[in-house]
Each structure stands twice: as structure tokens, then as C-alpha cells.
Length: 81
View 1 (spheres, rainbow, N blue to C red):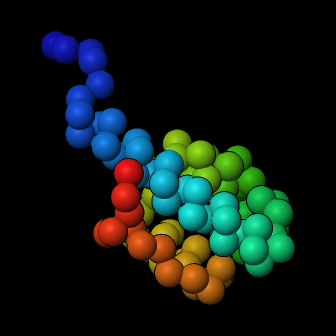
View 2 (view 1 turned 90 degrees about the vertical axis):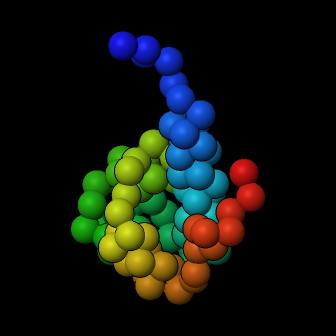
């Protein structure tokens, strides 16, 4: 079995990273620390760090909750990678 990372996996990683940057920017604009956002999301701070770094496979419900808490919309379907 081939252990190399597929083009699809690379795309997904880049997509998560781009959205993570948008989340971090929105969090900072609101004046929240990672700890603040973690508390509002009811997750660990390390989860927020992983989301912002593109290392967490969040679901649409989590993205919607982040959007509501940060009062922003993420352009997850039109992200330019």
C-alpha cells in the first residue's frame, strides 16, 4: 500500500490551514485568546490551536458554532489555496 500523501490529502490540509487562518484572524479581531474561545466552544485550548493550524478535522457543526461565536462567515467554499 502506498504511504505517500495523495493530492487530495494535500488539498484538504491546505484547505483546513486556510480556514484556520480565517478563524485565528476572526478570534483576534474579537479580542479573544485561544483560552477564551476554547471556553466558549467547550473544547480544550489545544483544539483551538489545532483548528487554527489546520491540524484538526472539524465538522460543519463546529464551524457553524465558531461562526456564530465569532460573528463572522467563513468562505469555506470559495477559499483560494
